[in-house]
Image (cartoon, rainbow, N blue to C red; front, side, top):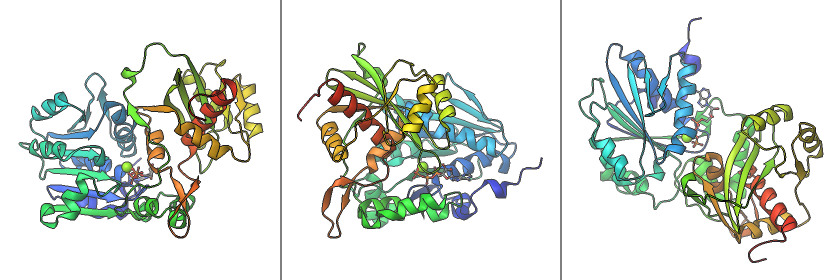
Amino acid sequence: MELNLNTVLNHKHQELFQSTAPELCVRGGKNAGKTYSIADKLLLQPRLQPGKKLKAVVVRKTLPRIKASVLEIMEKRAEAQKIEFKLNKSDYVAQVMGLKIVFLSMENKADHEKARSMTDVDFIWMNEATEMRALDYDMLRMIIRGGESSFSQIITDFNPIGKTSWLYKRFFENRNGSNGVHKIHYTVFDNPWARPEEIDILKSYEHINKNLYDINFLGLWGELEGVIYDWDIVDVETMPESLDETFYGLDFGYSVDPAALIRIYRKADEFWVEEVVYKRELTNQALAQMMRDKGVNESADIYADSAEPKSIEELHREGFNVKPCEKGPDSVKAGIDYLQSLKIHIIDGSENISTEQRSYARKQDKDGNYLPVPIDAFNHAMDAIRYGIYTHCKKKLGGFGVM
Ligand SMILES: Nc1ncnc2c1ncn2[C@@H]1O[C@H](COP(=O)(O)OP(=O)(O)OP(=O)(O)O)[C@@H](O)[C@H]1O
Ligand SMILES: [Mg+2]
């Protein structure tokens, strides 16, 4: 069957596809289609420039994040464009027709040295560029040279979090600093695949947290304020070898909300959380199958949303040890207070936990004061973690920390 690229590519992103500026800066709200279109733009190049040897370097801060985001997305977009994506997993280099794609983390000196030794680079893409530093950008910009492409480009894409970011200072505060940089701004309205329910969620922030509304819906520079958790992201290698126990938290979802299953490791009063499932449109049977595939032990404690007894029962019948979480009149606030008193780390690569954590914030009243209650969004992984830790530790183990 003939491939019609018009149905695959985002027609509202013409400017992004057509830009040949040496530096392209794509800022925007959530769900604006930025990342998909940049992946598409790079993957289109071997088709547009046949017979040439092209090279792209795709960068995120760490390897687990590469695997959980850009790598998966590029594989998916190559499939949508009906081209073969041949990945060599030993060095994270992919070949797509005439385009070689090098996936590179940007964490330490060794990463910088690896980048500096690269030759014939045509394109660089820094995804979620707010995670990286101006220093990384400057070094990467220098390695674009010697390629065969008709144009070369360094592309950044990000949500405009925080005016303290180097991106704000470099490209937005100082007008002269961004000479020659092509800046594009998109919102969810530029994504024809965004569903009305998803748009409504982003829009609903207007009256509950203005900063999140600016950043996530309008894609304007804003400060993250009123954020509830401040967990750090750690490499799985840094976890202690012996742990006290492993259990799970589960939040159900289906059409709009994803089902979120989080694995929780405990050693004394310290916790590590890891994403196992975060997916929409899973029936409970499909969820159970996924849990089996991901090695969830049938005897492990799983604490799930007590508002869904039918789903709990169905998973029980599938053989899992699922039980209702603790809920009461004040349990959301009590659970949050409890979690705030503990030391919790996110295992790197748990993309949806980090994304939710960044936006899970307190509501504001009409005068902008923060209320003790959280917003009702970005709370699937957040709730799953709260169900798990609060119910398990507070109720079963009698609690840790300051209560
Ligand atoms: N060309 C496309 N074809 C099909 N679906 C698309 C396309 N572009 C975007 N989407 C859909 O929209 C979703 C959001 O797109 P994307 O992840 O690119 O947005 P983003 O602007 O990078 O968001 P964020 O700021 O959260 O990173 C995708 O997960 C996908 O479901
Ligand atoms: Mg993105």
